[in-house]
Image 1 (spheres, rainbow, N blue to C red):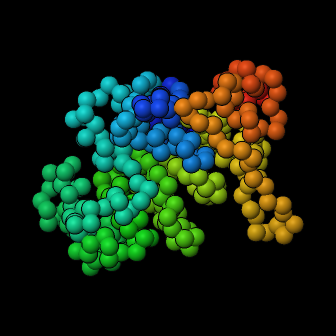
Image 2: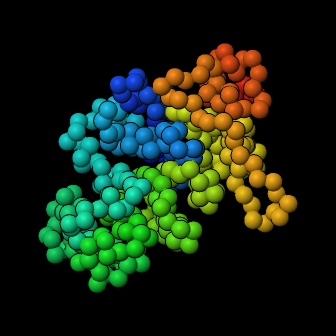
Length: 321
């Protein structure tokens, strides 16, 4: 039996946005480990800090954001200590990202082939003709006819554009891929196709994947482990099967209960009361306390730390431990 090899270790990561209204702690002291070949599902409501965490890992946080603390150890190297020139070598070649909106990720004035060949030739010292052949082979693997390599982004459907963005992320066979809401703008049929494609490519390329989504049903299909984020914090971290069988944090339980099940005709649709807290003025104690049906006095006084409950289970809640 092979021993799992950690490819990414995040320790105490903090990313803040410095706005006129104040400091937004979008990622607040987050830690986790991903082993090579695993898929980590990162779930939570919009504004919980998921995408900021993804951008922080590759050090592409847009201004006025700034990483203010923590370590990002990728394949034994702390990326926080790497120079920008070194990060340019790592991005795309070793760590890549599938962005949310393919229409804004692709240059409308560049042909699809130019997008792919530019990515390949930037990192590999090969001739453009050879890069073009690699690009055609990649399109074929993505289920797009190589004959369309000279088409522009607007000539493709939303699902096709998303396939191209996935191709850009995989062009150099990276060790780690961060997929930021890869199916958010697609209908359910195309979403299913993209998820199947990601599964196949993950197996073919032996990828390690961070899947960022607000759709907990998507991570149910894809993830080995799941991290649940709320207001800039990870509130539960677990292997997927244990989390779905027995969610520990009240927020995780509420997320699962809010997903409608078409197989249950008698199901009562539930929702989470209230709104997430303003990250400019976080409440004292647990950040979920105003929406939690189980909150008691301590929950309003001291913020719970993420604590280990069993081998693969961590939760930040006073109901446990």
